[in-house]
Structures are given as C-alpha cells and as structure tokens.
Image 1 (cartoon, one colour):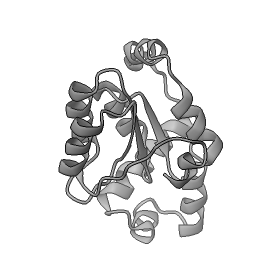
Image 2: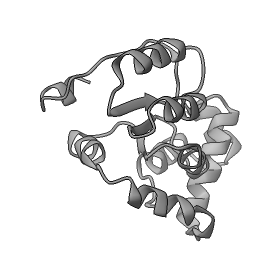
Image 3: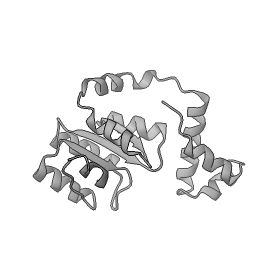
Length: 161
C-alpha cells in the first residue's frame, strides 16, 4: 500500500474478509488488491462477492504461495490478475495500471487450452506438496527427496505461464 501511495493512489486497508466487503460497499474502489491468505478466510472466497459488488473494478490477487492451480482458480472466479509475492514495485504498478478488462476475459476463455511445460508441472507439484505440509519447507523437501536449499531455489524461480 505504501508503494502505491507514493504514486498518488488512495489506499485503504482491511484486516479481514468481512471488513474488506464492508469497505468495498462503502468506498467503491476501482482497484482491489486482495491477499490470498486473510486472517479469517482465503482471498479466493472474496473474489465472487467483490466482483458482484464492484463489476468494473480490477481485482488483483496476491499470494506468497503461487501455483498454477490457484492462478487458474482466481481467474475463473473473476480476478483480473494474479501476482506472486514478493512483488516488486514495477510489476505491481504494471498490474494496477492495466485498465482494459477485455484482454483478461479473452485470457480467461483460453485457460483450459494452456499446455504446461515441465517446469510448470514441477512448480505445481511442489506447490501442492508445500500446501500439504502447511508451508513447511523442510518437510516438503524431505517428501520430494531434495535438499532444502534446492527447494528454496526452485520456489524463487517461478516459471512463466
């Protein structure tokens, strides 16, 4: 939020899902930055209600545990973009400044036609195992039979979709 405030965006912050919906009704924002992991629920659960309240708003989902499966889910639910944290200022601004929704919906129609590379399939599998282990890197590395540092390097190199 601080990064966007520096570029003259007015920003507000909600602590949980119910507060986010109340603020959306009251403030009617043009852009919603939604974290996947909220205090009380998944950000994925808020996409449809936010889309109903704010049909013209951009909804951007941010997550620290990015995977192809959650990206596809987010887009199918109505998110306009999906960003893996940590996200740099340039990437965040580029996503926020997209104001044509037509390209998003065209991309949404072709989601089922995506052919995954081996790197993307590996990334998706790692994300599923990581989720199963509740984000525990060491347990995930053991289950995948790889060194913890190797897993950390793979997690830092998210393949392009």
